Length: 457
Image (cartoon, rainbow, N blue to C red):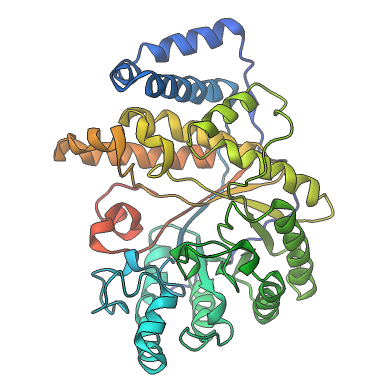
Protein backbone atom coordinates (compact mmCIF):
# COMPACT_ATOMS: atom_id res chain seq x y z
CA UNK A 1 0.00 0.00 0.00
CA UNK A 2 1.12 3.56 -0.68
CA UNK A 3 2.69 5.24 2.31
CA UNK A 4 0.59 8.15 3.60
CA UNK A 5 1.85 11.64 4.50
CA UNK A 6 3.76 12.12 7.73
CA UNK A 7 1.75 13.47 10.70
CA UNK A 8 2.28 17.20 11.15
CA UNK A 9 3.12 18.45 14.66
CA UNK A 10 1.12 21.06 16.51
CA UNK A 11 3.40 23.97 17.20
CA UNK A 12 3.01 26.64 19.82
CA UNK A 13 0.22 27.49 22.18
CA UNK A 14 -3.06 29.31 21.83
CA UNK A 15 -4.96 30.42 18.78
CA UNK A 16 -3.72 29.71 15.29
CA UNK A 17 -2.39 33.05 13.97
CA UNK A 18 -3.35 32.05 10.43
CA UNK A 19 -6.97 31.48 11.34
CA UNK A 20 -9.13 33.98 13.11
CA UNK A 21 -12.75 34.42 14.10
CA UNK A 22 -14.75 37.07 12.30
CA UNK A 23 -16.76 38.72 15.04
CA UNK A 24 -20.09 40.33 14.37
CA UNK A 25 -21.30 42.50 17.26
CA UNK A 26 -24.67 41.48 18.66
CA UNK A 27 -26.80 44.57 19.16
CA UNK A 28 -29.79 44.51 21.54
CA UNK A 29 -32.18 44.59 18.59
CA UNK A 30 -30.36 41.68 16.91
CA UNK A 31 -30.48 39.68 20.13
CA UNK A 32 -34.19 40.33 20.59
CA UNK A 33 -34.87 39.45 16.96
CA UNK A 34 -32.92 36.20 17.26
CA UNK A 35 -34.70 35.14 20.45
CA UNK A 36 -38.06 36.07 18.97
CA UNK A 37 -37.32 34.09 15.82
CA UNK A 38 -36.47 30.97 17.73
CA UNK A 39 -39.32 31.31 20.17
CA UNK A 40 -41.51 31.10 17.09
CA UNK A 41 -39.95 27.86 15.80
CA UNK A 42 -42.02 24.72 15.83
CA UNK A 43 -39.52 22.93 18.07
CA UNK A 44 -39.81 25.55 20.80
CA UNK A 45 -43.59 25.86 20.43
CA UNK A 46 -43.80 22.11 20.97
CA UNK A 47 -41.72 22.48 24.11
CA UNK A 48 -44.61 24.25 25.82
CA UNK A 49 -46.34 20.87 25.86
CA UNK A 50 -43.44 19.52 27.96
CA UNK A 51 -43.86 22.06 30.74
CA UNK A 52 -42.26 25.35 31.69
CA UNK A 53 -38.77 23.96 32.37
CA UNK A 54 -38.57 22.18 29.03
CA UNK A 55 -39.79 25.29 27.26
CA UNK A 56 -37.29 27.53 29.03
CA UNK A 57 -34.42 25.16 28.30
CA UNK A 58 -35.36 24.82 24.63
CA UNK A 59 -35.72 28.56 24.14
CA UNK A 60 -32.43 29.24 25.89
CA UNK A 61 -30.51 26.65 23.90
CA UNK A 62 -31.93 27.77 20.56
CA UNK A 63 -31.46 31.46 21.19
CA UNK A 64 -27.96 31.21 22.60
CA UNK A 65 -26.91 28.70 19.96
CA UNK A 66 -27.71 31.13 17.22
CA UNK A 67 -26.44 34.15 19.11
CA UNK A 68 -23.15 32.30 19.10
CA UNK A 69 -23.38 32.05 15.32
CA UNK A 70 -24.20 35.75 15.06
CA UNK A 71 -21.25 36.66 17.21
CA UNK A 72 -18.76 34.14 15.84
CA UNK A 73 -18.77 33.44 12.13
CA UNK A 74 -15.83 31.04 11.88
CA UNK A 75 -13.25 30.54 9.20
CA UNK A 76 -12.83 26.72 9.14
CA UNK A 77 -9.40 25.29 9.87
CA UNK A 78 -7.71 24.06 6.71
CA UNK A 79 -6.45 20.84 8.29
CA UNK A 80 -8.68 19.95 11.27
CA UNK A 81 -8.17 16.79 13.28
CA UNK A 82 -10.72 14.27 12.09
CA UNK A 83 -10.22 11.13 14.06
CA UNK A 84 -11.65 8.11 15.78
CA UNK A 85 -11.11 6.36 19.10
CA UNK A 86 -10.05 2.73 19.23
CA UNK A 87 -12.30 2.11 22.23
CA UNK A 88 -12.77 -1.41 23.54
CA UNK A 89 -9.36 -2.63 22.34
CA UNK A 90 -6.63 -2.08 24.95
CA UNK A 91 -9.19 -1.33 27.64
CA UNK A 92 -12.45 -3.18 27.14
CA UNK A 93 -15.96 -1.94 27.87
CA UNK A 94 -18.54 -4.69 27.93
CA UNK A 95 -21.26 -2.76 26.10
CA UNK A 96 -18.91 -2.28 23.14
CA UNK A 97 -18.08 -5.99 22.98
CA UNK A 98 -21.54 -7.63 23.26
CA UNK A 99 -22.15 -9.65 20.10
CA UNK A 100 -18.72 -8.91 18.60
CA UNK A 101 -16.46 -11.69 17.27
CA UNK A 102 -13.96 -12.86 19.89
CA UNK A 103 -15.87 -11.14 22.71
CA UNK A 104 -13.82 -11.80 25.88
CA UNK A 105 -17.00 -11.44 27.96
CA UNK A 106 -18.67 -14.39 26.20
CA UNK A 107 -20.53 -16.82 28.47
CA UNK A 108 -20.56 -14.43 31.41
CA UNK A 109 -23.33 -12.20 32.70
CA UNK A 110 -23.33 -8.48 33.43
CA UNK A 111 -23.68 -9.35 37.10
CA UNK A 112 -20.62 -11.57 37.01
CA UNK A 113 -18.42 -9.34 34.88
CA UNK A 114 -19.51 -5.76 34.15
CA UNK A 115 -15.92 -4.62 33.52
CA UNK A 116 -12.42 -5.85 32.71
CA UNK A 117 -11.35 -6.11 36.35
CA UNK A 118 -14.25 -8.33 37.39
CA UNK A 119 -14.02 -10.40 34.20
CA UNK A 120 -10.39 -11.27 34.93
CA UNK A 121 -11.30 -12.17 38.52
CA UNK A 122 -14.17 -14.33 37.30
CA UNK A 123 -12.13 -16.16 34.64
CA UNK A 124 -8.95 -16.72 36.62
CA UNK A 125 -5.45 -15.85 35.51
CA UNK A 126 -4.95 -18.54 32.84
CA UNK A 127 -8.26 -18.08 31.03
CA UNK A 128 -8.09 -14.28 31.30
CA UNK A 129 -4.63 -14.34 29.72
CA UNK A 130 -5.86 -16.58 26.89
CA UNK A 131 -8.96 -14.52 26.11
CA UNK A 132 -7.26 -11.15 26.23
CA UNK A 133 -4.33 -12.30 24.16
CA UNK A 134 -6.79 -13.32 21.46
CA UNK A 135 -8.85 -10.14 21.84
CA UNK A 136 -5.86 -7.80 21.60
CA UNK A 137 -4.57 -9.58 18.51
CA UNK A 138 -7.88 -9.60 16.62
CA UNK A 139 -10.17 -6.74 17.66
CA UNK A 140 -8.03 -4.07 16.00
CA UNK A 141 -5.57 -5.01 13.25
CA UNK A 142 -3.54 -3.41 10.49
CA UNK A 143 -6.60 -3.63 8.26
CA UNK A 144 -8.51 -1.31 10.63
CA UNK A 145 -5.80 1.31 10.28
CA UNK A 146 -5.96 0.95 6.50
CA UNK A 147 -9.75 1.47 6.61
CA UNK A 148 -9.43 4.49 8.90
CA UNK A 149 -6.97 6.14 6.52
CA UNK A 150 -9.14 5.23 3.53
CA UNK A 151 -12.09 6.97 5.24
CA UNK A 152 -10.03 10.21 5.07
CA UNK A 153 -9.49 10.35 8.81
CA UNK A 154 -6.11 11.57 10.02
CA UNK A 155 -5.95 10.69 13.74
CA UNK A 156 -6.52 7.77 16.10
CA UNK A 157 -6.87 8.09 19.86
CA UNK A 158 -5.79 4.89 21.60
CA UNK A 159 -7.24 4.36 25.10
CA UNK A 160 -5.23 1.98 27.29
CA UNK A 161 -5.19 0.82 30.89
CA UNK A 162 -2.16 0.93 33.15
CA UNK A 163 -2.14 -2.88 33.19
CA UNK A 164 -1.13 -2.88 29.53
CA UNK A 165 2.12 -1.18 30.57
CA UNK A 166 3.08 -3.42 33.48
CA UNK A 167 1.58 -6.48 35.11
CA UNK A 168 -1.18 -5.69 37.59
CA UNK A 169 -3.41 -8.22 39.36
CA UNK A 170 -6.06 -9.34 38.44
CA UNK A 171 -5.68 -8.13 34.85
CA UNK A 172 -4.25 -10.13 31.96
CA UNK A 173 -0.46 -9.76 31.53
CA UNK A 174 0.99 -6.50 30.23
CA UNK A 175 1.39 -6.35 26.46
CA UNK A 176 2.89 -3.13 25.13
CA UNK A 177 3.72 -4.91 21.89
CA UNK A 178 0.14 -4.19 20.78
CA UNK A 179 0.71 -0.47 21.26
CA UNK A 180 4.00 -0.87 19.39
CA UNK A 181 2.10 -2.40 16.47
CA UNK A 182 -0.53 0.36 16.53
CA UNK A 183 2.13 3.06 16.17
CA UNK A 184 3.81 1.16 13.35
CA UNK A 185 0.52 0.88 11.46
CA UNK A 186 -0.32 4.54 12.13
CA UNK A 187 3.05 5.59 10.72
CA UNK A 188 2.53 3.35 7.68
CA UNK A 189 -0.82 4.94 6.84
CA UNK A 190 0.05 8.53 7.78
CA UNK A 191 -2.14 8.74 10.88
CA UNK A 192 -1.46 10.86 13.95
CA UNK A 193 -1.76 9.09 17.32
CA UNK A 194 -3.08 10.32 20.66
CA UNK A 195 -1.93 8.06 23.50
CA UNK A 196 -4.68 8.09 26.14
CA UNK A 197 -4.28 6.85 29.73
CA UNK A 198 -7.88 5.68 30.07
CA UNK A 199 -7.46 3.58 33.21
CA UNK A 200 -5.00 4.78 35.87
CA UNK A 201 -3.59 3.02 38.96
CA UNK A 202 -6.20 3.09 41.71
CA UNK A 203 -8.67 4.28 39.04
CA UNK A 204 -9.68 7.89 38.45
CA UNK A 205 -13.45 7.28 38.60
CA UNK A 206 -15.94 4.58 39.51
CA UNK A 207 -17.14 3.69 36.01
CA UNK A 208 -16.43 0.88 33.55
CA UNK A 209 -14.58 3.40 31.38
CA UNK A 210 -11.52 3.12 33.65
CA UNK A 211 -11.57 -0.69 33.78
CA UNK A 212 -13.42 -1.19 37.05
CA UNK A 213 -16.91 -0.16 38.02
CA UNK A 214 -16.74 0.22 41.79
CA UNK A 215 -19.46 2.09 43.67
CA UNK A 216 -17.30 1.89 46.81
CA UNK A 217 -14.49 3.75 45.02
CA UNK A 218 -12.98 6.65 46.94
CA UNK A 219 -11.02 9.55 45.38
CA UNK A 220 -8.11 8.61 47.63
CA UNK A 221 -7.85 5.30 45.76
CA UNK A 222 -6.40 7.02 42.70
CA UNK A 223 -2.60 6.92 42.84
CA UNK A 224 -1.02 9.96 41.12
CA UNK A 225 2.54 8.75 41.81
CA UNK A 226 1.97 5.39 40.11
CA UNK A 227 0.09 7.13 37.30
CA UNK A 228 3.16 9.29 36.67
CA UNK A 229 5.32 6.19 36.50
CA UNK A 230 3.04 4.63 33.86
CA UNK A 231 3.19 7.86 31.86
CA UNK A 232 6.99 7.93 32.16
CA UNK A 233 7.36 4.38 30.82
CA UNK A 234 5.11 5.04 27.83
CA UNK A 235 6.60 8.46 27.07
CA UNK A 236 10.17 7.13 27.10
CA UNK A 237 9.22 4.17 24.91
CA UNK A 238 7.62 6.31 22.19
CA UNK A 239 9.51 9.60 22.56
CA UNK A 240 11.11 9.33 19.15
CA UNK A 241 8.16 7.89 17.27
CA UNK A 242 7.04 10.08 14.38
CA UNK A 243 3.36 9.08 14.64
CA UNK A 244 2.84 10.32 18.21
CA UNK A 245 0.97 13.64 18.09
CA UNK A 246 -0.38 13.84 21.64
CA UNK A 247 -0.40 12.23 25.09
CA UNK A 248 -3.64 12.48 27.09
CA UNK A 249 -2.79 12.40 30.78
CA UNK A 250 -6.01 11.09 32.34
CA UNK A 251 -9.39 10.23 30.84
CA UNK A 252 -12.55 11.52 32.53
CA UNK A 253 -11.36 12.01 36.11
CA UNK A 254 -14.23 11.84 38.58
CA UNK A 255 -15.90 15.12 39.56
CA UNK A 256 -15.13 13.98 43.11
CA UNK A 257 -11.39 14.41 42.54
CA UNK A 258 -10.38 17.87 43.84
CA UNK A 259 -9.35 20.21 41.04
CA UNK A 260 -6.22 21.33 42.91
CA UNK A 261 -5.04 17.73 43.14
CA UNK A 262 -5.66 17.22 39.43
CA UNK A 263 -3.81 20.38 38.47
CA UNK A 264 -0.77 19.32 40.52
CA UNK A 265 -0.83 15.96 38.75
CA UNK A 266 -1.10 17.62 35.33
CA UNK A 267 1.87 19.87 36.09
CA UNK A 268 3.96 16.89 37.23
CA UNK A 269 2.87 14.74 34.27
CA UNK A 270 3.76 17.50 31.83
CA UNK A 271 7.28 17.60 33.27
CA UNK A 272 7.58 13.78 33.12
CA UNK A 273 6.59 13.72 29.44
CA UNK A 274 8.97 16.51 28.45
CA UNK A 275 11.88 14.97 30.38
CA UNK A 276 11.17 11.64 28.66
CA UNK A 277 11.95 13.25 25.31
CA UNK A 278 8.51 14.20 23.99
CA UNK A 279 9.33 17.84 23.30
CA UNK A 280 6.78 20.61 22.98
CA UNK A 281 7.49 21.21 19.28
CA UNK A 282 6.33 17.72 18.39
CA UNK A 283 3.97 16.28 21.00
CA UNK A 284 0.94 17.95 22.59
CA UNK A 285 0.13 17.27 26.23
CA UNK A 286 -3.64 16.81 26.40
CA UNK A 287 -5.75 17.54 29.49
CA UNK A 288 -9.27 16.16 29.63
CA UNK A 289 -11.42 19.04 30.89
CA UNK A 290 -14.04 16.92 32.58
CA UNK A 291 -16.79 18.44 34.82
CA UNK A 292 -15.37 19.57 38.14
CA UNK A 293 -16.94 19.95 41.57
CA UNK A 294 -15.26 23.34 41.90
CA UNK A 295 -17.91 26.05 41.67
CA UNK A 296 -17.13 29.14 39.56
CA UNK A 297 -15.76 32.00 41.67
CA UNK A 298 -16.61 34.63 39.13
CA UNK A 299 -18.73 34.93 36.02
CA UNK A 300 -17.13 34.90 32.61
CA UNK A 301 -16.38 38.29 31.14
CA UNK A 302 -19.36 38.27 28.80
CA UNK A 303 -23.00 37.36 29.10
CA UNK A 304 -22.41 33.76 28.14
CA UNK A 305 -21.12 33.11 31.67
CA UNK A 306 -24.63 33.44 33.04
CA UNK A 307 -26.01 31.26 30.28
CA UNK A 308 -23.44 28.54 31.00
CA UNK A 309 -24.31 28.62 34.68
CA UNK A 310 -28.00 28.20 33.86
CA UNK A 311 -27.28 25.38 31.43
CA UNK A 312 -25.19 23.67 34.08
CA UNK A 313 -28.21 23.73 36.40
CA UNK A 314 -30.18 22.07 33.61
CA UNK A 315 -27.44 19.39 33.41
CA UNK A 316 -26.70 19.97 29.73
CA UNK A 317 -23.02 19.24 30.28
CA UNK A 318 -21.67 22.70 29.50
CA UNK A 319 -21.37 25.05 32.43
CA UNK A 320 -19.28 22.90 34.76
CA UNK A 321 -16.43 22.91 32.25
CA UNK A 322 -15.84 26.62 32.72
CA UNK A 323 -14.86 26.26 36.39
CA UNK A 324 -12.14 23.70 35.79
CA UNK A 325 -10.89 25.59 32.73
CA UNK A 326 -10.27 28.61 34.95
CA UNK A 327 -8.42 26.48 37.51
CA UNK A 328 -6.31 24.93 34.76
CA UNK A 329 -5.55 28.36 33.34
CA UNK A 330 -4.28 29.44 36.75
CA UNK A 331 -2.27 26.24 37.24
CA UNK A 332 -0.86 25.73 33.73
CA UNK A 333 0.60 29.08 32.74
CA UNK A 334 2.38 30.01 29.52
CA UNK A 335 5.52 28.07 30.47
CA UNK A 336 3.57 24.88 29.79
CA UNK A 337 3.89 24.79 26.02
CA UNK A 338 1.69 22.90 23.57
CA UNK A 339 -1.07 21.97 26.01
CA UNK A 340 -4.45 21.08 24.51
CA UNK A 341 -7.77 20.81 26.37
CA UNK A 342 -9.98 17.84 25.48
CA UNK A 343 -13.76 18.14 25.93
CA UNK A 344 -16.14 15.18 25.61
CA UNK A 345 -19.51 16.25 24.25
CA UNK A 346 -22.42 13.81 24.43
CA UNK A 347 -26.14 14.52 24.16
CA UNK A 348 -27.42 11.10 25.20
CA UNK A 349 -26.95 11.78 28.91
CA UNK A 350 -28.20 14.43 31.32
CA UNK A 351 -30.60 17.29 30.75
CA UNK A 352 -30.71 17.08 26.96
CA UNK A 353 -33.46 14.49 27.38
CA UNK A 354 -35.93 17.21 28.39
CA UNK A 355 -35.44 19.13 25.15
CA UNK A 356 -37.35 18.67 21.88
CA UNK A 357 -35.51 16.41 19.47
CA UNK A 358 -35.07 19.22 16.94
CA UNK A 359 -33.28 21.35 19.52
CA UNK A 360 -30.94 18.51 20.55
CA UNK A 361 -29.89 17.92 16.93
CA UNK A 362 -29.45 21.59 15.92
CA UNK A 363 -29.15 24.40 18.47
CA UNK A 364 -27.53 22.41 21.30
CA UNK A 365 -24.39 21.27 19.39
CA UNK A 366 -23.80 24.85 18.24
CA UNK A 367 -23.99 26.13 21.79
CA UNK A 368 -21.79 23.30 23.08
CA UNK A 369 -19.19 24.16 20.44
CA UNK A 370 -18.91 27.63 21.95
CA UNK A 371 -17.29 26.06 25.04
CA UNK A 372 -14.35 25.14 22.81
CA UNK A 373 -13.57 28.85 22.55
CA UNK A 374 -13.60 29.54 26.30
CA UNK A 375 -10.01 28.52 27.17
CA UNK A 376 -6.99 30.49 26.03
CA UNK A 377 -5.48 27.24 24.74
CA UNK A 378 -6.34 25.02 21.76
CA UNK A 379 -9.19 22.59 22.34
CA UNK A 380 -10.24 19.25 20.93
CA UNK A 381 -13.49 17.26 21.09
CA UNK A 382 -11.91 13.96 22.05
CA UNK A 383 -15.19 12.06 22.22
CA UNK A 384 -18.60 12.48 20.61
CA UNK A 385 -21.11 10.24 18.86
CA UNK A 386 -24.44 10.13 17.07
CA UNK A 387 -26.22 8.61 20.06
CA UNK A 388 -29.32 10.59 21.05
CA UNK A 389 -30.96 10.73 24.51
CA UNK A 390 -31.84 7.35 26.00
CA UNK A 391 -34.91 8.64 27.81
CA UNK A 392 -37.19 11.62 28.26
CA UNK A 393 -38.92 13.78 25.72
CA UNK A 394 -36.26 13.53 23.03
CA UNK A 395 -36.24 9.75 23.24
CA UNK A 396 -40.02 9.56 22.92
CA UNK A 397 -39.95 11.81 19.87
CA UNK A 398 -37.19 9.71 18.33
CA UNK A 399 -39.34 6.59 18.60
CA UNK A 400 -41.98 8.27 16.44
CA UNK A 401 -39.57 9.26 13.65
CA UNK A 402 -40.34 7.15 10.54
CA UNK A 403 -37.51 4.93 9.39
CA UNK A 404 -37.30 6.81 6.08
CA UNK A 405 -36.78 10.08 7.98
CA UNK A 406 -34.34 8.73 10.57
CA UNK A 407 -31.50 8.55 8.06
CA UNK A 408 -31.84 12.25 7.17
CA UNK A 409 -32.09 13.20 10.85
CA UNK A 410 -28.84 11.40 11.69
CA UNK A 411 -27.05 12.81 8.64
CA UNK A 412 -28.05 16.33 9.69
CA UNK A 413 -27.13 15.70 13.33
CA UNK A 414 -23.68 14.42 12.33
CA UNK A 415 -23.09 17.34 9.97
CA UNK A 416 -24.16 19.90 12.59
CA UNK A 417 -21.81 18.47 15.22
CA UNK A 418 -18.87 18.05 12.87
CA UNK A 419 -19.14 21.57 11.47
CA UNK A 420 -19.63 23.08 14.91
CA UNK A 421 -16.58 21.29 16.32
CA UNK A 422 -14.43 22.29 13.35
CA UNK A 423 -15.71 25.86 13.19
CA UNK A 424 -14.86 27.26 16.62
CA UNK A 425 -11.70 29.35 16.50
CA UNK A 426 -9.89 27.49 19.29
CA UNK A 427 -10.87 24.01 18.14
CA UNK A 428 -8.32 21.72 16.52
CA UNK A 429 -11.04 19.27 15.48
CA UNK A 430 -12.70 16.11 16.73
CA UNK A 431 -12.28 12.38 17.48
CA UNK A 432 -15.38 10.18 17.26
CA UNK A 433 -16.19 7.51 19.87
CA UNK A 434 -15.62 4.80 18.67
CA UNK A 435 -14.31 2.90 15.59
CA UNK A 436 -16.31 -0.31 16.13
CA UNK A 437 -19.01 -1.37 18.57
CA UNK A 438 -21.68 -4.00 19.10
CA UNK A 439 -24.32 -4.24 16.34
CA UNK A 440 -27.02 -2.82 18.64
CA UNK A 441 -24.83 0.23 19.33
CA UNK A 442 -24.76 1.48 15.73
CA UNK A 443 -24.70 5.21 16.56
CA UNK A 444 -21.51 4.72 18.59
CA UNK A 445 -19.72 2.85 15.79
CA UNK A 446 -17.98 4.97 13.16
CA UNK A 447 -17.66 1.91 10.94
CA UNK A 448 -21.45 1.56 10.95
CA UNK A 449 -22.09 5.30 10.63
CA UNK A 450 -19.86 5.48 7.55
CA UNK A 451 -21.35 2.37 5.99
CA UNK A 452 -24.91 3.64 6.45
CA UNK A 453 -24.03 7.10 5.17
CA UNK A 454 -24.92 8.89 8.41
CA UNK A 455 -21.47 10.42 8.75
CA UNK A 456 -19.65 12.14 5.91
CA UNK A 457 -15.98 13.07 6.19
